[in-house]
Image (cartoon, rainbow, N blue to C red; front, side, top):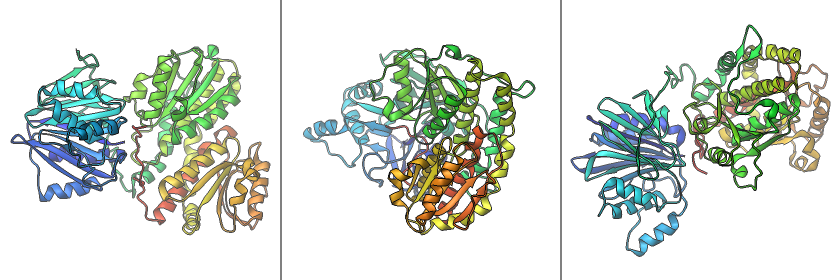
Length: 605
């Protein structure tokens, strides 16, 4: 989960590399570095910590050169320090790497037996030493091709060479890599976001591809070493997407953008005049679908869990949910009449992408729900549905989660209607109710003042518990995940009905317990579970849209939600949980946008 940038130009590249690395910090921020070529010498600068630290080093000791590579790291092999930071260089070659070389230990042992010395604990340095040996007798392209043949695992690579001071070579297997084009300047990057400030023309490498960049041209080669052509895509313009405006951080901005992004998504897919959902090019006739399989990781997986209830409630189809990292290792029975739906904010999530590849190899029909339409998962799916949330910079997902749920909800409605599982009047009523959602989300955001008071209860807590039933259970899981991600406090989400089967042992006097309890068919059962917590001293935060007289002096706080169609309550319940995690983290002075140990785009297994 690292970020890569490479620039070949007719002018000094250090400043643009630094600016691009800042945009890539959502991919990693344990350490940073760059290497440029100047007067046939590799000039390497790197440090532990953030890109701003690297920028300070360059300010004191500038690095010149019209060609260079840069890297931000999320550590996999070796602790985050200057030695383990990328690039990893020898006298003649320098390498930046995103991914994991699975046979690095074996290769390292072979190299050490030949007398080679390693400076770092990383798997990447193996690539540097292998290339150094290959370059003794081969040109750069041949050396890279033969080195890659020895590697097992995943990688995106950027490589520069002392004795060939006008080229950068990039290579991809598993991890994403893009090329950008401009006048007298070409680029290599982990994704389009890092390249957008410099160009809107890009191409994506496919698995096994190698590219060779100079300032004037780009060449591509496939697995068989054949020269190939690549489609050039024109990126849409997103003005001011990376500006926080008046917000303290990107996460708060993204939380409060949710009514707008929800409205954008609804407008994209729903015909206002006819109360109709506009979907085209289904990969499989909805009437022929045998089963829906929903696949994702982390927050995206939670959106799948919510959607399982919707598909089961609206359609007659059996539905499965799967964590992508487990799905790909099971002994699966694929069916060409099943629809496999993959959910990913970045569209580059390694496990989700690998699960998609497995489905494609077995002839299954695939659909992806993503926030990045140019991503690997989007490009490899039979059908792609963008959530239109705009770039999400904060590592902990907020508006993308709402967007994922929204698209899954719309998809469940459309499939149910096309299968005649939902009558037209019910279908159109649900669409009318859905159009009210942006305004109701705005009302939910007004709970922030009360949430700030609630957040203080978590400062001394050693943990917390989130409970819900039905549609509220996955929201409880997501609320617990957000609190863990942002504040580093232990939090667990459970089905409320499971309390007596173990979790009740964790309840003690003063433990914060968040009850997600809309006025649905589970309401009174969830209230009963809440009373069990109260009897054991739990400190309750109740999130509900009910006016039922369940409130008593033992409930510390209640967040009242607006009334809405029962099936839409997950959207409203999510908002106070996001605000809670945000304000607890703010009080604890945590890094809101870049929580420790986490990266936005999980591009390694």
